[in-house]
Length: 144
Image (cartoon, rainbow, N blue to C red; front, side):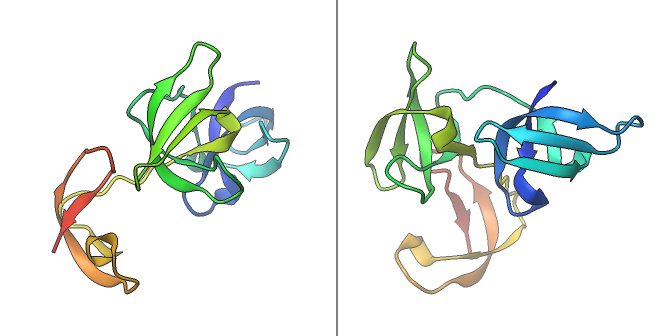
């Protein structure tokens, strides 16, 4: 019955809120029912973490106007628990449901090798090395 974040289908970096509905007696595998009704079986501790409420300033992925998720920053959490976000392009979305957000949980460190678009404008991706991590409104990093 614990409320957790589960890494959906143990792939990518998509974490969703759910409830543990069954566990093996030795606690090595769990089944999670996500808030949208999907069920994930065979979840190990590597793919489960304690649920934490969103906070203003969190970088998330939001799908406010459809099924496509885009990186955004939480700008306000309303008393009715609806959430306002600002996307990377500056566009705001208001009164989103928790189900329209997913955690964005990639933490880079200096020296990590990544593929990136030059200043986010190019359609080409280039190999690069993280030289500085910035915790700004866009969740960007400095690379070379």
